[in-house]
Image 1 (cartoon, rainbow, N blue to C red):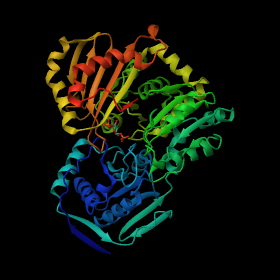
Image 2: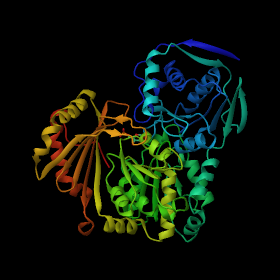
Image 3: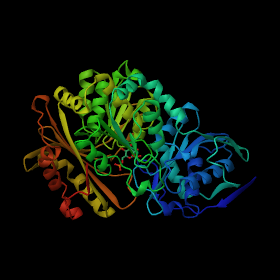
Image 4: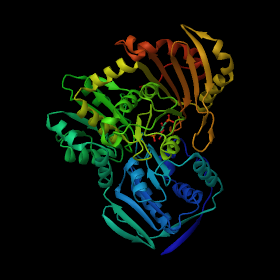
Length: 543
Ligand code: G16
């Protein structure tokens, strides 16, 4: 088999963000673009020689073509074996599990997560390391450096692998093993949860709708919920992975999964609703008449995880990203385990999980997970909720309500300002950073600032420091606002404004988060001069 050494021109801007390299699909389709990045990944990890990798994606447009390129490059770089999901399908948590199960040297996931798919939409590549988690900052920095200096990439001249045929194939010296995307993942879930108890719940007439959003979780959800656990046929909605996700935005939140939320708020609502995103790592939880914010979901799971067999011995600790509400901190305090606050990005949980310091992690951006893999895991979160519902025999609304009455409530909302010119977004952030020392004396509307800083994190395990991880403004009376720029967008910049207000358990009222957070919003819009910097105060997406 002929190995071609192709002279490569460095392609600027291949800087992995919060979650790998994410760009418009047409950018990835430019000659040499994907190849440049993949070679830079191999070079960053000391080459691919004799190594084994897992490769799969969420089924979006360009998924299979990209996999063929990666296979030919892995073969040319001397890899021993690549494990690939049938038809190129693997969810992000399934890849994480397969890396760990097969003790491979890492894996490549082709996905732009919750961003839309199609030739005019988004594509992405993530590299996960040997622990199954997203590459550490030092690895992504090395990949970025390589993309700027790369001189050549290696690829074999060969026929495409048959991604549809299960079993082993040969690509030159390299083995390509095509596996069923679901079975190992299903096996792992069987070891974590009380499937008999969940089966009995469904058998008793409990109803559920799971919106797979035409993304990767369709086959997983059908196999697990309908076939294994006995949920009625039709429980899984939009279960066929499509290259353009049916024209939708596979982001499980009340804006993009509105049909499911509407169903859950209506008279014919089933008992439980859930959704997952493009690559299956995010989740949304909805009960009859109640949407559960990701921050509240993390807190409820932390308080009840012991009801599932895998967590029956209790949690060693929990971790949440900084912008996530402090609801889980209150659970940790009461139940007596540590709670860590990390920067945004699942990679920051990796060391804590590896060191056994935390069992559960979560983020406001709809990610929840545990030490079973090193990624957030959409279906896992849904199964843990089901296990808790089956054991407690209460509705989602009752469980959440009881939770607030026990721990108090952190009213929470995120406002996204999308496709903002990059200079305007930077101006807004820079201006606030400059005024940070003066903010604590400022009063805006009804609220007085008590503390303001830029979040820096020192990893408790390896001591590494990550600076500039978002602006925190604390107000007297238990409110907090956070400002940060998204690391996952593909167009301009996205400014995220996260707000929360803690209300103690005996004062929890039945009012909307928007109402409770109105003073916080006015204060932060004024302090950060949104109108002046962005020319607007209204957000594009509010969740
Ligand atoms: C990615 C990371 C998450 C992180 C999110 C933040 O999510 O995996 O850990 O919370 O980005 O996004 P942003 O920087 O836009 O706020 P995903 O699901 O896109 O991989």
